[in-house]
Length: 419
Ligand SMILES: Cc1cc2nc3c(=O)[nH]c(=O)nc-3n(C[C@H](O)[C@H](O)[C@H](O)COP(=O)(O)OP(=O)(O)OC[C@H]3O[C@@H](n4cnc5c(N)ncnc54)[C@H](O)[C@@H]3O)c2cc1C
Image (cartoon, rainbow, N blue to C red; front, side, top):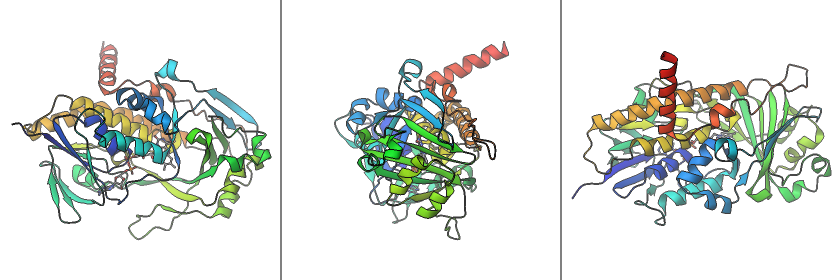
């Protein structure tokens, strides 16, 4: 009897669960090791761009499940300046152009839906096993062995490092430490009940908080990005501000803190009063220092491949971080599609990891760079005219139909250039 192809995924975030779904097959044994005890996301929203929605909804068949969980189609961007004047309105019905919609989810709902899709026996392939409270502290990239904090170890034919921006596996793959970089930005994340916000007429005179649109209010180096989630029952705000020193430990491991309400409001002093209403209503405001990483020299070594924030953490200014993780996962599924048993030599696994890296690297790196570009001050100092267009890079970002199609397009465009 042939032995199953064993896959270990380190990290049960969006990248890890997506990889579990994409790789799930009858002849495979997939185990996710997640360090946290509850494997849950935070209370904030997340948008999946059409390039990722297409994969999640159409390839992984999650369209109906995600709508049942309160996912909303984003119907447009509306950009206001600090005088409260509408500067730009961009309709966003994107299916005709990109083959899917930009979707907004409560993070917990998206995470739960991915977890169910990976572990439930209602779908084809062997259900994935998730081990929680299982922190990986070391690995051997060539042999595919992981070492856990509790003394256990486990061996895989393919080892996927989906362990986020502070990735432990990244160090093993690269043979050196690559630290996450400060970007100069921090973000408050807030969520308020829509029913409360609807009592604020100053706000509702301008914005209908149940209408599925993303509103941005922008002034120089700070901006409010807001919109509804969970079928309009909650309203979410990400408030981007210039970075400040956080209460970091000596190792710099804590990049989140409870934000000061007064300080947050002070940061948006010159913003219109209506736009500050959700901030005033927020019971608390978490503050995240936003970091990213520079492009890496490689994402793979032997049986090990990095995906998601572990290899291309980026600023959230285009909402592409998780979407790129979904693309990585789909690519894993495509490059390992024919393997079902564990007889594959390390050289064969590494060959596929290399092909995946060569297919994904340029695209993910370009989107990382665009995300930095979109984060630059969006008005001149002291001026109100907004010069940033959030749809600027959408054609590049969203015209995507899976890794193999992307590779073929890249190869043919290079042939044309050479000819
Ligand atoms: C303010 C903000 C807004 C954002 N908005 C969007 C958006 O709208 N759209 C979008 O696409 N992206 C957005 N992003 C980015 C997105 O959240 C990330 O890109 C995405 O969540 C990365 O997923 P990941 O699974 O790679 O990493 P993580 O979510 O960091 O998951 C890593 C997992 O690995 C686990 N882990 C880590 N180390 C170990 C270990 N040693 N052993 C075992 N487990 C381990 C962690 O506990 C965690 O569960 C936003 C980010 C921020 C900060």
